[in-house]
Length: 100
Figure 1 (tube, rainbow, N blue to C red):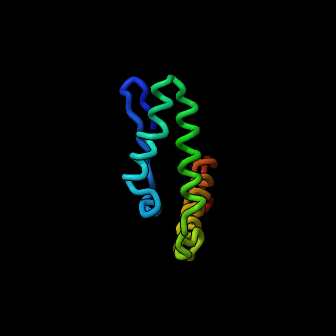
Figure 2 (figure 1 turned 135 degrees about the vertical axis):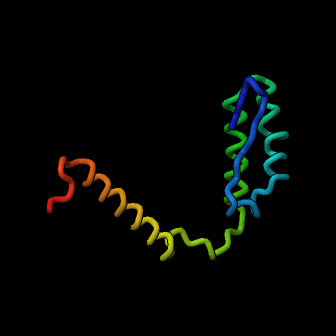
Figure 3 (figure 1 turned 90 degrees about the vertical axis):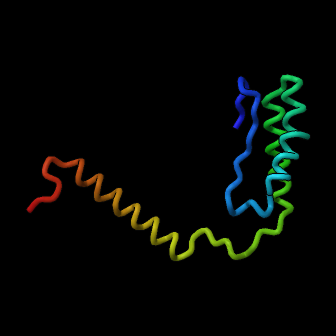
């Protein structure tokens, strides 16, 4: 998040990446990569360089194998959400949603 008027830069890191990108690393990227470019008025260059640094760190990191994106629990949650959305759409799209 870049707030130019407030002169603030923050980078939010998800809980699963805190081990790879702790606050100390993020603060270092902000202070040594992004802020110097902002000081020169080159805001897009600062954001670009900061993003490239983060991507580089993630590419070199050892990602634990225990991070499945689609495990049974996640698929069940997605299925339930899809079912609720389907039923809500059907309910609200007809004058008499569920005929008797």
